Length: 72
Image (tube, rainbow, N blue to C red; front, top):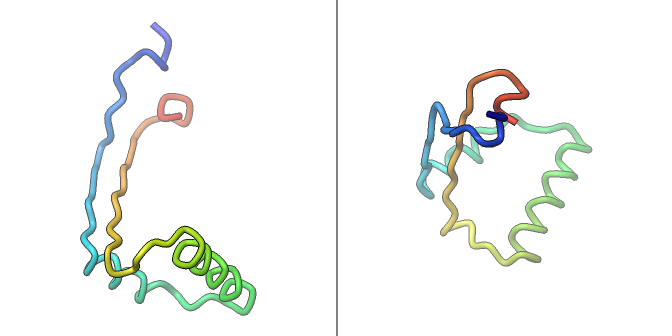
């Protein structure tokens, strides 16, 4: 059976509510000048162009374990 047909499930799933999400955003390391510029452009895209509300955001992370080929 090929890898793509086998069942693939994450080793970890984490759901982050809005309060945890905002705290995580404030605790990120301070980027350099160009990093600050890129972060600003990303923020503008997500908030202004796509119209997301920072007070309504949440996040989910999935972690898979295994070799690159198996997880891909």
